[in-house]
Length: 214
Image (cartoon, rainbow, N blue to C red):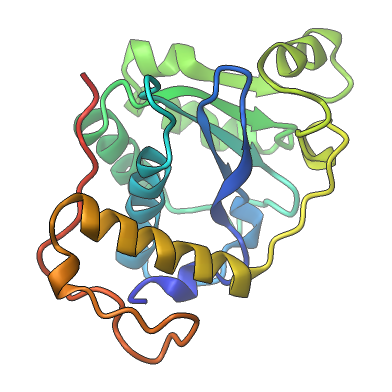
């Protein structure tokens, strides 16, 4: 509930499909940025990473990021410091959790931003970043190799319709908060309010952390 406002536009959420290897997919849409608190934005991202890990199928330890650049511009992009903090969290606190990050159809102006950000990436993470363009044959084949076209949203070159309903997604997150608390034995501290976001679903402490990748 503390970061629910960050998810109102669907700028970061867990998809309802997996890639061909059964990995959880997070969809990021930076053009949908709706807040100015960098700390809360980072907390929201960490929350969604934890949720993605919580929903990994048995035997799978990694997730995939699909980043849609529709509506993105330099004026709506995160500050360099925020991008660096995000990379730091991913590389230092979730090593080997990211299987691949697809940057789908970024505008040419993104190249200026990328020239700075890429220096914060270690070599292994850098190799996991894939630039994909819908009119490029190799890009299309790459997406087909990782995703079933029937499940992949049209926003990423597939055939499925991408719709984000914040109310329904919030209900799903509340249920996952309960599952997370039960997993870690914190369920006695949980106070579920269902779809009502006016009260706390989980007490601030202890913080739920998903099991580390082996």
